[in-house]
Structure formats: structure tokens, C-alpha cells
Length: 142
Image (cartoon, rainbow, N blue to C red; front, side, top):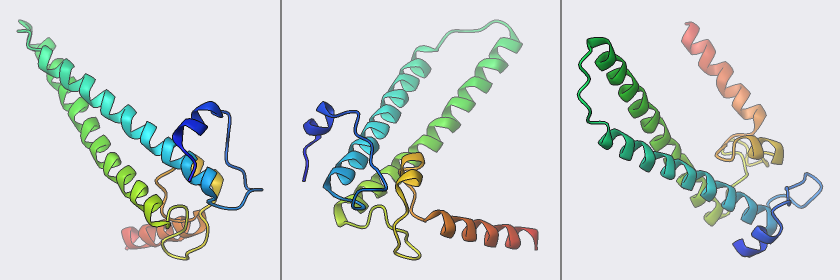
């Protein structure tokens, strides 16, 4: 297995469809991508918490207080979505460890490098995802 330091030296590496799918270099690339994404989300969460804790000012104007409450609610909703995203990142990291990362949960076929680059937490191939969304749309329309 390649170490993270090798990727740091070769940060211009991008997985290619021409390579063997999910070779050691690709696996390490996506592991690093997921860990970096998770760390960025956690850093933003810490900053938000710090900001919310420091925002104890008494706003005299009702409109200012309403805007502040709205901003706070939006921030908390965003953090909740990011908490769920961290859970999906952790699941993807577990799939890397068990060797199932990059393969469609429905078909077992490779998800594809381009899709994983765009959505590293993807669990379905593009075709399987489209089928899933069509089924959801049909059920929703019924």
C-alpha cells in the first residue's frame, strides 16, 4: 500500500481510466481525498462553533435579532448536513479498508473514476443511480 507521503510529493497525480481500476495508487489517492474532505468539514465546524459561542452580543433592534437568529439556524442546518456527510465519508473510508470502495453496491461493477472524482462517497454507478432516481420519481409521482 502506498503511503500518504508519496502522494504529497506527487500531488499532481490524478487517477486515470487507463490504469487498473482501484490499484494501490488510486486507493491511496481516494483515501487521502476523503480524509482531506473530512478534515476540511471538521475545521469549518470548529470555526462555526467558535463563532456561535462568541456571538453573544445583545442586539437592540428586533430586525437585527431576527436576522441573527435566522443566520444561526441556517448555520446549524448546514452543520447538520455536514455531520451526515462526515458519516458518509467514514462509510467510504470503511469501504476502502474492506476493498469494496469504487464498486457499485447494486451491480458490483466499477463506479468509474470520473464519478468518484466528482462524488468520492458514491456507492452506485451512474447507471444504477439513474435507475434509482427514476424509481424514486415514479413512486413520488404516484
